[in-house]
Amino acid sequence: MASRTDAPTRREQILKEAARLFAERGFHGVGVDEIGAAVGISGPGLYRHFPGKDAMLAELLVGISGQLLTGARRRLAEADGATGASAVLDSLIEGHIDFALDDRPLITLHDRELDRLRDSDRKLVRQLQRQYVELWVEVVREVYPALTEPAARSAVHSVFGLLNSTPHLGRAGTLPSRGVTAELLHRMARGAFAAAEPGGAGD
Amino acid sequence: MASRTDAPTRREQILKEAARLFAERGFHGVGVDEIGAAVGISGPGLYRHFPGKDAMLAELLVGISGQLLTGARRRLAEADGATGASAVLDSLIEGHIDFALDDRPLITLHDRELDRLRDSDRKLVRQLQRQYVELWVEVVREVYPALTEPAARSAVHSVFGLLNSTPHLGRAGTLPSRGVTAELLHRMARGAFAAAEPGGAGD
DNA sequence: CCTCCAGGTTAACGACCGCTAACCTCGCTG
DNA sequence: CAGCGAGGTTAGCGGTCGTTAACCTGGAGG
Image (cartoon, rainbow over all chains, first blue to last red; front, side, top):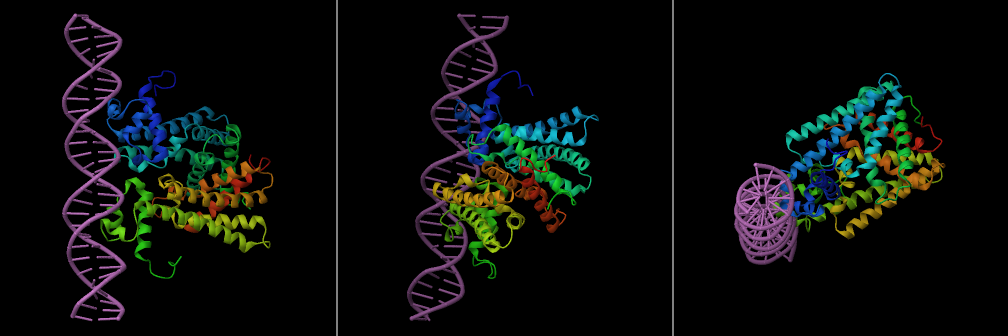
């Protein structure tokens, strides 16, 4: 939380590099020596900042889930009663896309290494994720009332899959451009939701 | 290929269980002893069937990519000039959905453990995947001519993300039902493609 | 100036893991 | 029935990895 303006670097450096490495080679595929080397220190020096390798992954995953949920709640509150549900959904989609484009390693970890956590941490992360999903489901059902609740939940998960596909889009900066990609993803997400309705604009 | 009618051989049993375990806990998170235990033999007995743990993953990934590509080519050929491009796209979507619903562990491995392969195997898998994507891109561009080629490719990757979200839908058989889920995914995929077009039915 | 602590270092331990070696035991087949 | 190969078994080696132990160092505070 105390990270946006200040720069108490080491810990955050470590987390950032660990996230990148975990996303690239998997949690079990990365050694602590590599993480250390990535931030200029070597090996067990990491244990001055974290009690263990597991703790790094836990902090990353809890942080991601929390950030997503917090951001979504903020967007929901900002719009409040004024703007329509459709605008809120657009805001949620925009926020998720920003995250997926900004922090690709994190979005990768988010649905890939969850099972490597201790039981307590995993439960916490899943709870945060569930709240995030439920928040989306409510908004989606308001915009598309023909959707049953299970259908809406499935649709939300599927759209997450669509939005989280950013790591597969371009190995390096091969994307057309950030703005264009974001717009494309946004349109597709809306189109997917719209088509999820039984009487929608499917075919 | 010699597996549909005959009883599953040891080799196929091993591959199936290995796929499940790799998907659940990651390639590096599963030991050969666990794979052996899952098929009733124990430990190094696996080496009577495979030269090593890497070889199992390689065979799985090559097999998946090949099956997907072969199936797509068959569907493209079956439709030939008779049916329209839109029907071919529907057929491709249907095939991918069947795969994603049938073999969830495989679809998970497919975009998760690719980097754990030896260079030669990884190149082969990537080549198969690229051909599969390009096949989709051509069909999609025929159905939605307003899409530029990069946009179509991004859209295809994103729809794969959407369709491959099946593992997140229900931990067990909590899905509404296979048919309903398949239909929902199909409509969403079509809706996403349609909305990808610049002047599409976005909002 | 002495102290102390945050933040490093290297050495090494213990566990685990992939794989090999050596051996066993069926069910064929000549 | 002898022989043998397919398909197992257990024991154990070598390497890697997470973690701990013991030690070092520079800068802030009394």
